[in-house]
Image: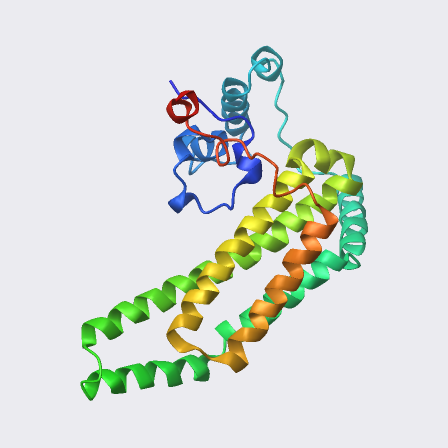
Length: 253
């Protein structure tokens, strides 16, 4: 019998491979029920609704009584959806927080995708190993650390943009606000992702100490963090279900 944590999936970083709460996440367990399911099939949605009902107290009767009619959207529905998305995109495009997040992500990706830069660093590390300045094992460990840092930075940059967008949508779109979580909680995910980005960036700087390429990233990260906390001063204090709660045994002690 699963004990699901209500709403935990609203406030995560979508890095399921590293999450210790996957078995208590209704979304994660739901995706495993029918990994090869066909969304065009009524059975797919019946099973999805049954899982939703089983993991949300008080909704079982209502959810399971729904008749599923799977059909292509009409032209009018598609047009309405496109118009709504265009309005959302236009609104988000002028948001200062997203512009700052975009600047941070763009400069970060510019560094990560500078292939000649990383090749030079790799050649220098290989030369040190060849000359006996460091052991091949140490060079390999360092290469693994660099790969891990870069992977984390790329992932967290996407999370930051996604969660800020979600928080802003909650502020001006009622439907998104009902489904997507509390703005302060979404923003906290962005702030935690920036914390982890800083850790990864510090790890890279500890290896390469390239002031010209990396120090500007610390500056952009700090600017974005300050702007977020100014716009959402209560975000750090938000208690995310599961993630910021003490385990039952610890809470009772």
